[in-house]
Image 1 (cartoon, rainbow, N blue to C red):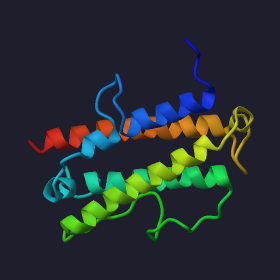
Image 2: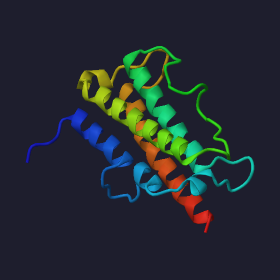
Image 3: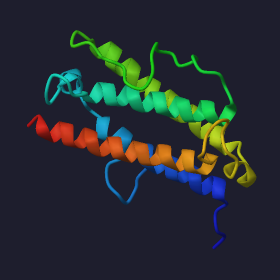
Image 4: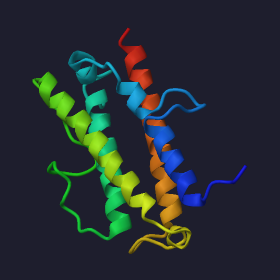
Amino acid sequence: MKSPDIISAIVRQLEESYHQQSWHGTNLRGSIRGVPLTQALWRPSPNRHNIWEVVVHCAYWKYTVRRRLTGEKRGSFPLKGSNWFKRSPDGTEEQWKKDVRLLEEMHYLLVEEVKKLSAFDLIKHTAGSKFTNLQTITGIAMHDVYHAGQIQLLKRLQK
């Protein structure tokens, strides 16, 4: 059996942590599959994030990693702000679905960018960072898994 090249292996890790079947259990996309608006908006306490905010946070960081890989300037994320984006308790099902699509889009764009890299690119550091591209990319995969677990917990706390 031929061993996969490093880029293919990293893409596989990104895909498993986001939406493809994985040994570790629910991935990020699986954690939000079928989540209705009321569940997406629920907070365990007033100053805690809800599922919807976690989804947009994950979309933002996928964008950020892609931006770091490409050297793209800040400010091109479709929403104003950074890191955490407050979602209104008056949000609509349409707005919730739009933000889920944003997460999908940011994931797709990130994966397509990673596919363009060479093994040599993985050891490079992004401008002004102490981390290599490899560390940054594997970090975003771990970020997805972390937040998938957080979402699963938020769903269970609601019951």
